[in-house]
Image (cartoon, rainbow, N blue to C red; front, side, top):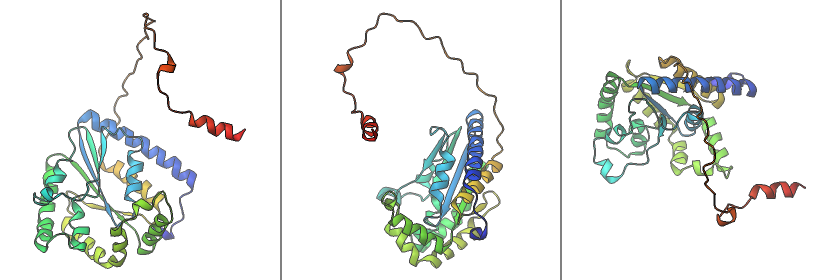
Length: 271
């Protein structure tokens, strides 16, 4: 659907993105002032645009308030724990926002498709996940879940773009390439996951991400409407008067080791 819509003009996109990001700063101040706890889950196929959306959400936010949780593969010790245990340690304290770049839904997606979990573990997850999320919401956590949807054609185009770009080639993993041959398996896994975990307390919000710019605007705009924040009174900031000299003498500059002036070589080369 999204690929049939007109592209958002660059200037329109940049202006609206900045406006939305300024509202995110306002939301952040509300979270800090009220002690709210916000969890935002980003899920979807590989190369669906999750990382780009997270980057735009956090661009102007305080990393001490809004942090990203992107967990690596579980250790041997973690594999023996209750499945949700290692995610619990990353949940927000009062006054924090946590954005999960993939989350506990790994079990319903890649672990299910690639055979990294047993059938019993998978079905136990589908049973426990709604209970777990209801517990989070009942405890006062604001939980938002976003699924970034992309077509097989666009996903492969993005994979090829990563392959051909030395600056982004690191983003293309063997698991990404494997997902190309398992497209329908991932589709079935996602549909079954939605059946069990799209609950009234924590609905799945699908983001059409064929157009990355449109997806980012739509996702952030929805996030802002889903959190009941209000603008906080601006904190008054006054600068203290700088005291006068008190006799301190700094050591000579040539006794310190400075980095070479690389920038100067750029201007000399232009002359």
